[in-house]
Length: 82
Image (cartoon, rainbow, N blue to C red; front, side, top):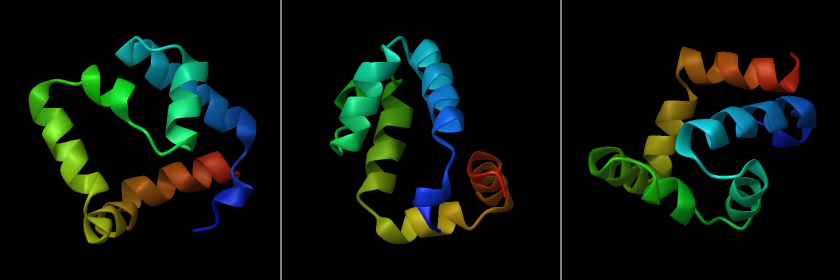
């Protein structure tokens, strides 16, 4: 998957939607994610989801498996304009 082909406008729309859902300003969320930090996102999740998220981040094989699902592929195609 080449993330360089993802439309920045669509990414910003996704960031806006996530920021509204978790109550963190989109710009702050974007800066943290670009820096590889997930502190704000994790702090706003319920404990169960935060644990699952941490497990996924720490397990590249799990992320690879998740990204190979039809839903993840469809989201990637939508974001990249394919």
